[in-house]
Image (cartoon, rainbow, N blue to C red; front, top):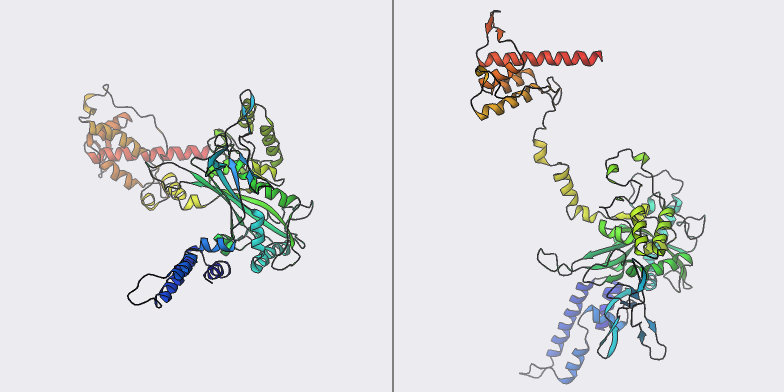
Length: 548
């Protein structure tokens, strides 16, 4: 009864692992307390029959599901420790045991040709030959059968295609909240040429997003081990967003073993099992013998329309060049540093998927490493298992996820420190752009004695005065008024003001308030001389601009 209770809580009531473990633990305590009521006085030990019963009780959801044999079907691949090539086992009908090749037969392309890897794949453990590096791949067929056994899941999968089909002739909606509302799905053809994917008929058409990511199982520390293992998962895009990413609806295709990430051309070995199933599901479909709505079963056709990863993983799984290479974009033909700042986006040109497929196949068929490097250098593509899908188009289906941009602070860093879009930057005044340039006379030993300055501070003030005189004068944004220039000049020393007037060959006389011409002596006199020069200069520039 406890085993049945655990299965019902998980499979029917949809409780996750921790709540199910709590229910099983509480029931175990109740059973122990009930048994304790029948113990003899002054006795704290259970009798043999009670101990036998307690030993049979499940201790967790894992043991409960294993007794009901509800675990997913899996296949253990033998991965080569040298080149990461994965080998599916063959089953011996006589002994019911799995057999693996003893050595890796993968051919590694080198400078002078290809040579077999020949690395040992197996080692003896517990009296049997077992893979040195196992890779556990889940059954995609089993996942589809379990999903379609749920009546609500099956209904939602059909409804996604039907709703998209019914909205074909409606005007496009600017607020797209589901991938089936996008224009891409309304033009994406299915396995039958000329027929849309969403035109399912009586079949089940499922669109999936595949995700590959690597993480450190020991936690990320500055001085810790930099180990790395990866996961390959698929999400059913037919399901609404509210339940799409729930653990029971995610298909965990496999866990890429560590302790280091596979090389850029080795990750395809781990993608091959799920791509094998997806190729079959596209070309001839998968027949599920029984679903929630059909006792006779239904045909299922599957397409991977999105590959969602962070930037490094996206380039690895798609066989594209990294972001630091000249081919920094997987969507357009822009390449090289000379195109990084182009804004004429209507002339960028969309990448041709058929051309990229041709060069990826050429890279795969190349006999030497030199040929592969030359193709990759010229085209920026290499072989990927995704190219086995006839509809694969990385320029439209390769997506960089937003999680790394938002939750890891990349957008925060770019906005605050690269673009300077923060509150402290907004409060600071932007530097004024000079209104004109002038060939200033530098201060030096040739200056007459009466115009010399005495301290280094005053020498710096000379360049400050020259900068003030070139500021834009007006009433618009980014400009200063004559009174503001007067105030800035008045804060400088008299000797610095006198030298600037000398360098501009300004007259040493000024008209006072009584209208008489007097010799310039005070700081206010020299400030007025410089201000008069600025006003005449601005009027002259304005007149020349109008005439030209």
